[in-house]
Length: 342
Image 1: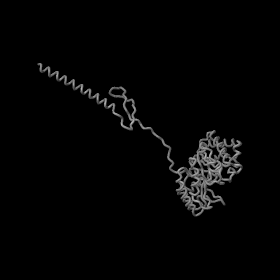
Image 2: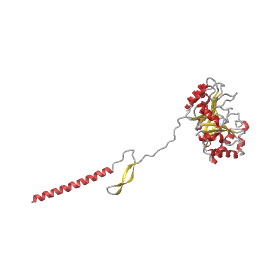
Image 3: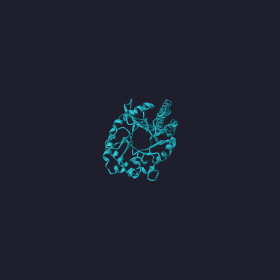
């Protein structure tokens, strides 16, 4: 009987020992599990879920979703466009001729009270997704602007541009570093200092009315005439806050014949000092058997070597005595032009 009791006690003790061992093992495993470090590069957050067996809410770890970053699209192709004439039908005919629609639609607008914003020419182009390029030309010098007498006109033009609503590249007083037009160097008492005052006055008025769809392009000729101090690109620069783009005009006039690189390389290098996007806003080549190659080499290849050039505009007009700049001055040139379009 004594042996039986001893055996029973032994068995009970053994069972208690086993139970305690198992309990302690589970506790240790739980401790270890809860204190393991998270895997590298993984973040977690606690979310509430329902335990169906107990109907109580418990916190369970779920992997956090990574934040979504949106990057601006990379510039993969150049914008291109043309000046094709003063009628909206001219644009449709040109696009039909070359087989593609322009990105940049260039027009000339005179600076007079009776020359209002060109809604008739531009509205359809804007609705079709084209950027309007306006060469805004005066018949007087900068002093007439700087004395404030043209403020009402500038403000109305700015308000009209805002109402238009579509993107505009505005190029007032283009090629001011030449001494040819009413706004040119030395004409009507014009100086680079007077230019900067007039430019900033206009820019501030456009900003004041909220015409945020308008970008100002400070547009130089590729060569400066006269090439003297006071008439360099840097002399006309009004400061980073007043310039959105740099524009350049340059042509092969065949006196002598110049390649695209010879027309633009030095000008691009000089304009790059301002660290602004550059647009070639007016270009073309004199007619002749080399014109097709000029187009292929220049617009098909060389222009793409300029990392800060974002687009170009062809001046498509036949000016008797001053060059036939039409892309179809001969069939080979037309085919070359069609081939270089993005």
